[in-house]
Length: 225
Image (cartoon, rainbow, N blue to C red; front, side, top):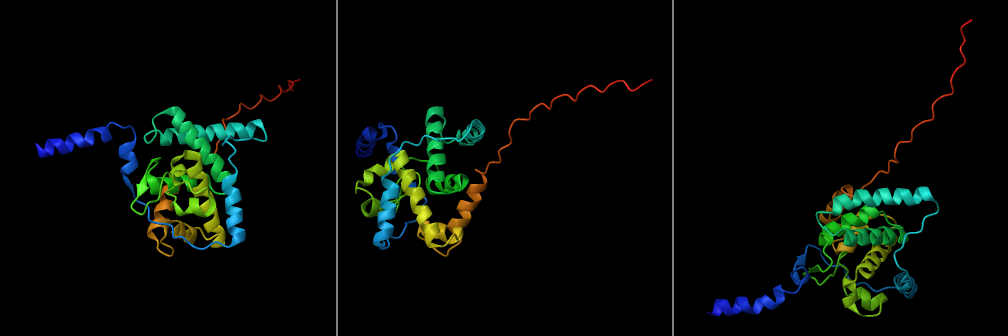
């Protein structure tokens, strides 16, 4: 009977969609809270505060078609993790938008998300990092509005994660290996950067536009006498 009562107590929790994912720990380490200079804090706060929706803007039709080809290719790769097309489309669009907004390689951001949370929106690490990019709650206090629950909102989490990684890249003067270690709280150790860089290769994409039919050469005049 005691065992049966324990199982019954768990049933209401199991019935809530997504709750098991919320409490499943993530692999991530812990970004280390460091003091920020006032100018850096102001710049990061401004980068976070712009809440424009993640709608891509293209300079021309070919750029839009290239994006759609990328979206189709990434959608197929991500389908095992996110089988619902609208959810998958919105996620990829937001990753594309936020990574480019921060000046980051989109494949790198996807690789980092794979290592950090395995594409689980409600992942929580043992250190308390949250969401897709496993952002530590202290960042919301330092450069946000203090509401850590917003780190489970897709665009907010991706915005924070991309801005933080860009900040670490700048601090490390473009050294990606060291910046990734700092992001994970394991600066100087190879395990985490190597894992992200290996995952990045799974999300690299080389755009190949559809082949166009070449126009037929003009008919040559009959050269026979």
